[in-house]
View 1 (cartoon, one colour):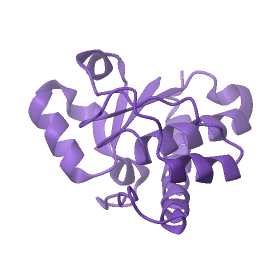
View 2 (cartoon, rainbow, N blue to C red; view 1 turned 90 degrees about the vertical axis):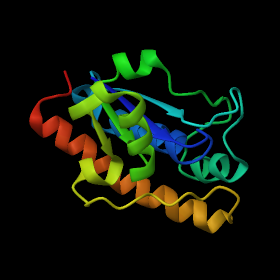
View 3 (cartoon, helix red, strand yellow; view 1 turned 60 degrees about the horizontal axis):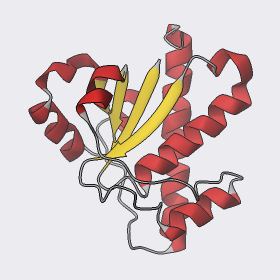
Length: 156
């Protein structure tokens, strides 16, 4: 299974979600080996690095995202991803408008995690503490998503 995390610029929320999902999958061992995670953005400056605060917050959690380069959402991602999780309802609307065939594989992260339709607030340009709070929120949602996928047996 391939999960794509989507935000605006692919420098904060979606790369943190990808990195945290990778860490969680590594922690659960072989059972998570069949789940692949990627990230992209809807309004990307291709090749932009992860924001400084995102890099620092992830480093505190033992995750190195210093080599990350932002990439745009593409037709290939739309085709290849089994599950597309956006950070906001607005991102979801954009994707469903541009890719009407995404249907049942497109959700907000909170929606798929079972936390209603809340948006993950964009920390871009804000303090380190806001990034740390955002990472905590994202980790909690990603843990729920991975647990749900594994319970449903969709990891393979």
